[in-house]
Length: 285
Ligand code: NAP
Image 1 (cartoon, rainbow, N blue to C red):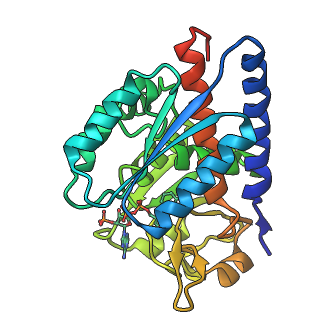
Image 2: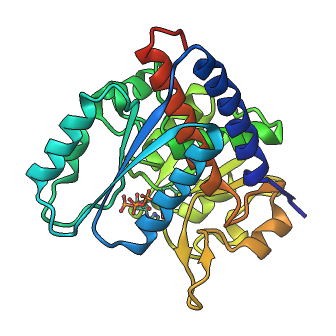
Image 3: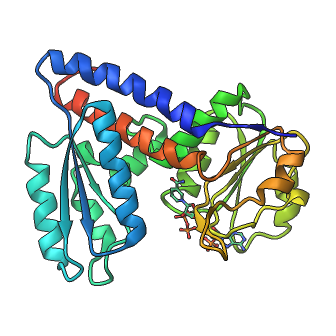
């Protein structure tokens, strides 16, 4: 039976470290601020934004919330981002995705100055991640790396399989595993023999967005199984991409949903905002 990887405990540790540094900076007169922008009435986005505000309170940051109506134009949103770019009280800018369809997400993300891009979605930061000389961590993949580190298993030389190739999860996830010397395979909807490839993984990361996608026959005995998925099942209950009960029988370590990757994403966002504040004040990171 797999050991549970406790995302709540690991995220609490990360946030406590951020809090300690934020308190020390406050004593030097440096206040840290995160601007969170939400557009429209997406219920899931509202929950994420509330969680981010709560995390800011926990680590001693000021959060500035901008809730804009569904009919906001791209120009209005871009103008707000430009204002936040120029605001010294704001160290990090987060625009909650998805945005209403009249707004081009890329145009908005590319407007955020890279120094305040705490989601690490700006092409300049993506390039840094690719090269491996990054200050900002891609939040969800970085959170996964912390969870893997918590198992004590070193990705070096291991078969690592990432299911999913999105720009925000799959691709940066593969990069971080590669930087840690894992032998990485990225699977997607066109992958042949996907089950076989997954069953060879020492570390399997699922970022598909389909409840119950990873079944026990895709899990190697003793593997580390990380479930990034956040889906609703037929009863409306939050669940991941991994059929938890059957996979937990075979895996060595497994993350639950909820309580696995989700809390880590927010903790790493706090860490990035701290990094942004340090860089803005000429402090080495
Ligand atoms: P996405 O952009 O929809 O990407 C999904 C990926 O899964 C795509 O690369 C897609 O392949 C692949 N895929 C879909 N069906 C497949 C199949 N049948 N076989 C193999 N691959 C398949 O989603 P995302 O933004 O990466 O998010 C993935 C999941 O993680 C979602 O449930 C999301 O809610 C969750 N998430 C969680 C957190 C967190 O903090 N826990 C953060 C971000 C995302 P193609 O590229 O070929 O289409």
